[in-house]
Amino acid sequence: MSSKAMKQPAALRAFTSAFIVIWLILAAFPFLWTLWGSFKVELDFFSLANWTNALTGARTIAETGDAFTGRGYQGAWVQEEFWRAGLNTMIVCFFVVLTSLTIGTLGGYALSRSGYKYTFWLLIIALIFRAMPPITLVSGYLLPFFELNLWGILPTTIIVLVAINQPFTLWMLHSFFQKIPKELDESAKVDGCTQFQAFRHVIIPVMWPGVITTGLFSFLLAYNDFAVTTMLLSKENQTMVPKIASFLGTTQTEGNVMFAVAAVVSATVPLFILVMFFQRQIVSGLTAGAVKG
Image 1 (cartoon, helix red, strand yellow):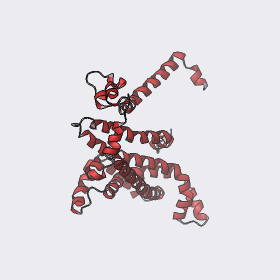
Image 2: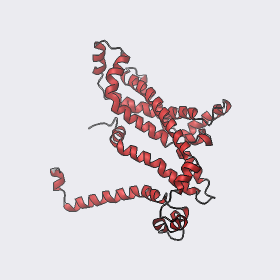
Image 3: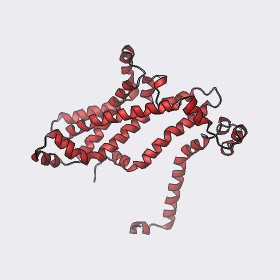
Image 4: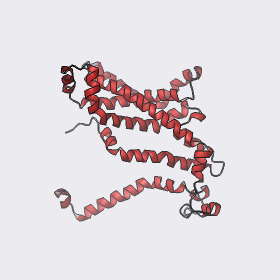
């Protein structure tokens, strides 16, 4: 423990620790409550008579003979084939990340090493494009997709997601490339490398942390997207987020809303694991390009 921390009053340290613990509990409560409720029947988790039924599982015990049940997960994954939405999500995320990183890496490197004045304006245009609401951009794709019979399939959705997320990827990778001294490129050229060989054999190995960080953000943007995937995918090709929304539209049948609860937990757990495992890379991405005083 540092000397500065030792000098802090005990009451202040206790208050700080208590505040952090309470904040963590409040932040984690919605997910933990949803996780708990996903193993109950609907009449327990959404009980209007007594909210403690969600804890005790009175109706769950009466219907299944146990305090916990996997009906929600079975209904979502087997009956409603949520596994198809999970597979579609992985396909979309994989190709969005692969395409975005390929274009963003080459473009970010070129812009970071370019001495032309228009480089700045290209980045500004990209930033303006990214700041626009995605829903306003997607509407322009609908007419040609309908006319060319390309609506509802995964490839066109991947293309649109790449187009929307590419400015963000370009900006982030450009920021990482700027941190790498240009002397590395020049040293590689002196040793006989071409510009591309210097990029491939010298710069990219140094850039791997930045590439991984950018890939994580591209994955999260594609994984959590709702507006684009809802408008451009047919019911058969839905990804997980719009599929969950479709469960909520069938609440007239008892139990269907628990499909949504189970699907929410199923979709959230991979994100939780990913964020916990790559938290350092995500923080470095959030602070990329920050000015040091």
